[in-house]
Image (cartoon, rainbow, N blue to C red; front, side):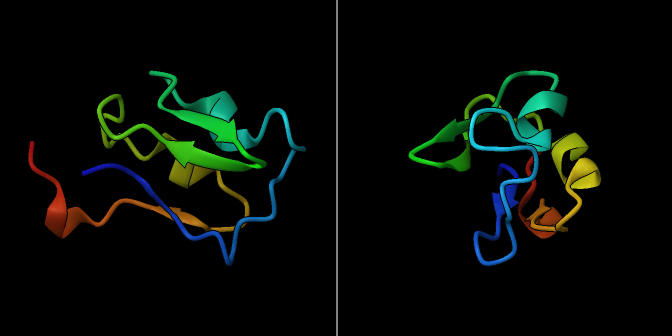
Length: 68
């Protein structure tokens, strides 16, 4: 499972080219594509750094779906 972004809450903090979630992801799993942040599930390590840094509280990791 990977971080999930609620696009109804996301305000693209920081601009269109570099949002906070992109900047804090240690494995570069979050990127901006087509004007919104997206998570590459294969790269995401479920660390929740993006979720902790998100000022909009738009990112979470559904812990009941995490398979460590």
